[in-house]
Amino acid sequence: MIDRYFRQPLVYDYFITLVSCAMLYYLYLKEIISLPIETTSISMSTDVSTIALTLAGFVLTLLTVLITFKTGAKIVNNSNQEDLPLFDLFFSTPLYFKTVDLLKGAIISLVFVAVVGFGMKLILRGEFVKYIFFANVLGLFIITVTLWRSLLILTKIVNLQKEG
Image 1 (cartoon, rainbow, N blue to C red):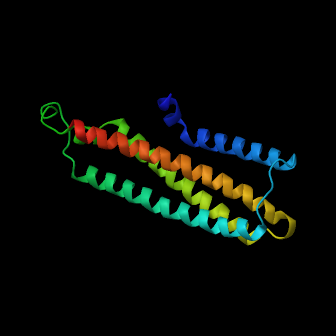
Image 2 (image 1 turned 135 degrees about the horizontal axis):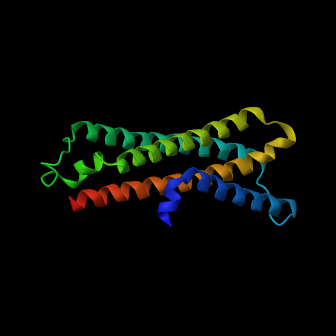
Image 3 (image 1 turned 90 degrees about the horizontal axis):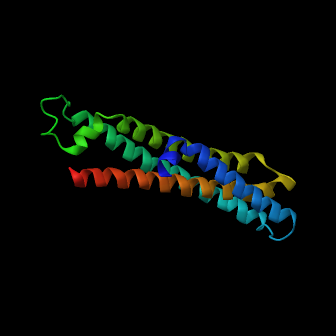
């Protein structure tokens, strides 16, 4: 199941998020839920965008560390394969490049959330300000699943280091 998720994580993340937002919007239209006051939504938009940018910085740091470790890793060949730590072997497999690609996607997703949040705050006026609430929900969902995915990747890397 998780392998399928890691093949196209952004598709799954955004699909789940859009379905959740659509359900919330439906509940709003049926007057089952009410929206917070506009000033609260605008304030939350700033918070969500700031959190997204901060987390993008953390994921970027993780990515930089991984790339730096690869620079110092020993080159794998048939004669020294048994002597190398498992983590060095990781750098010579396609799994390393998949990990880098997943983390790069996480950064793009988090920056997207921040730009949408700040952009909506700048552009929307009048009766359209209420839609900032739904953008905030979308942002929180994307932040949550992106952070979860990054933690899964980090956990797998740490487990790989334990085995080595």
